[in-house]
Length: 125
Image 1: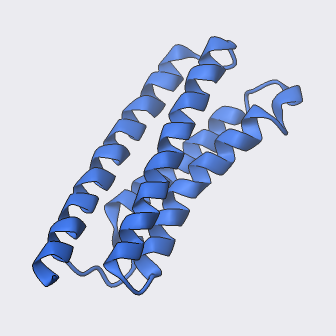
Image 2 (image 1 turned 30 degrees about the vertical axis):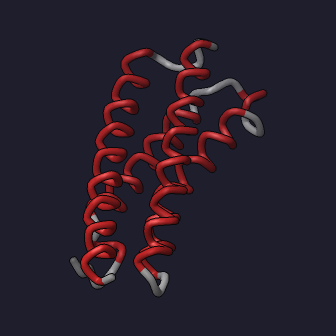
């Protein structure tokens, strides 16, 4: 599997859309959360496609796998922050449910990519 540019990766594209939706969602939060929960959610969301891009640009499959692992961690962080924001009643349950669906889809995509890259590593060894 060889992709010329990280922008061609569907998982990166989905990560960008999730980041956009996160920013849209956090715009509705109380102003006192601007530097708290909003900032943390935005940073976690940005980290997902950023780590996918950085990993793809690295020189080895192992490094790519490492960055994909970080992206999955950021995804789990974002999901946790979504739960907190819902518990604090900062957002509608339907909005959170849609975000969870996107998170789940991206998580499965990253896992699939990790699996394919691990198989590649084993074949090349």
